[in-house]
Length: 434
Ligand code: HAM
Image (cartoon, rainbow, N blue to C red; front, top):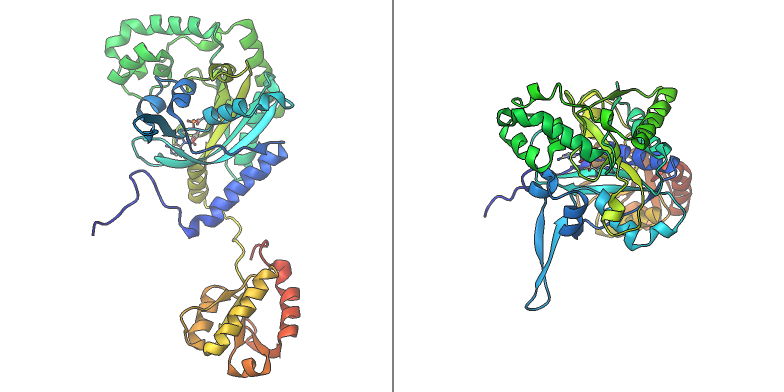
């Protein structure tokens, strides 16, 4: 038999990871609700054309990193090309248009959580399947909407204990001023074209803005004096950007103007940002986003502005682990139901089942292990109490309750046991931290 392994770049998230994952996603959801966002869940598969059009044919994501396949068509016909979502935004916009969310009160503030697929070169903290927390404000051009997205990202990372948070921020203009800047950038880089790294030579032709955030060593010397897009903004884009920066300053949110920040998705207009913080190594983004005022129209909807961001959960979890942030343990059953003999086993199963139906957590032994082994299991699972049903208890209709910490035990009727369990265990049952 071949040894099966997970697909390259994809990983299992094991049970011991649950407390930190649940802490992070729980914080994301509770903060999103605090800001007035509601959840939207879109399918993992979308039409390939949606991403080609929305994210952009010339982006790395669309040109190299999508998991696409041709679906089975009707008999004799070829099916549609489908793609595992490489980001949330395009799918959320598709859902906004398709479900007529534009005719509901605007803006719509929507968050999502789930798996994202990009066939990137696997490396540390770069996976081929990873999870994003994504948030979008659709239907407002107000810089306060940009601010809300930045504050949502900031609050989440701050509450999770991140240090030295700093926004990298830039504006990429709009369809009126961005092309003027691109021409200026192309003219500036043209004399150096042969000296740029090969991928950047290619980008200069296909997607010149991306040369700006190139990480290639050969390209770096030519970027330092490149023109700044902020010098090319028209009045509207400049006013929008300055209003946003004014809010950040008033609130004391740290930011740095980053002239080379353009981001790898084509839909951005005006604001683009990333949040940097301690723990990911130099210049790695915890999360990123920006405004996309032309996207909904590009996808066939009414002209509608929007702004959003996404954070990678794996990266957040990694930093929390590196920095030794502790999270609350998840609730575990505090009672172990043990038994001796087959007849008692039936009664024990019934007892555990009844407790769980009443909202009280309980574990039960499998495989007819000895009573001693069952007590060892109870201890290993961190249960505080063991309820024993042996032949005597079975005959008397009773339960022997053992308190492990105090080494005390007491035999009681099933009713008294039920009453004790409700009083001692129910209040701390499913939802409390043990
Ligand atoms: P993005 O910058 O491509 O933006 O991804 C957002 C975040 O997802 C990154 O900052 C990072 O934390 C995480 N991430 C990206 N790629 C990987 C990977 N291969 N492995 C692990 N984590 C990764 C977007 O996806 C935009 N849709 C964000 C947005 C929403 N803009 C507007 N609205």
